[in-house]
Length: 243
Image (spheres, rainbow, N blue to C red):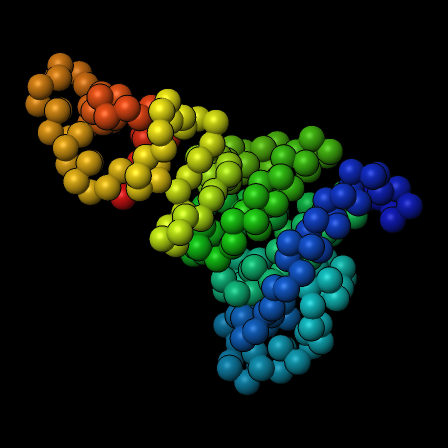
């Protein structure tokens, strides 16, 4: 399904605006360019790669031409970008999908966790949150099952961290995590809401006195309750109580 600019819905425009805002400062730098990916795919020389780079005259990702995205799908394309190039071109591909209604170069597949790109490391928290929202949106907007599968994999795990809801930076520069899944029944803990190393060791010492079926997490909860703190078990299991 292809759609023109005047067919964009209000929701489409919201996603496009957020993409422009969140990825607005992303720079390609020395990252691999789209025209360069074709040469890499064809095992071209360093000179050929340099000549190909000159064809990519864009200085911002929103200047990437739709015809370039169309061109590099069978030969070259997303599979041959390095991390800097992938982060730079991703918002252009996301925008293309929203504006045209057509998925470019199997984008949802390329957003799945893989050994080639460190998806968790190359994007900021705000970018990861937007990517997850984008995948959810195109899944519903265009009934795209591939986007749903991608969202339910890495991106759901990367963005579903309940203890990050309302971070507050303390005077010591650390960032205690506070959210509705973590409560302090009495006075706030003296060192924020995370266990110190000593507290964790003390908590884990209870393990040998519990039933065999109890994990270290349950022991930590028991110790925490004795010290006057209440923690969400899900958050502890995901490592947010670690120092």
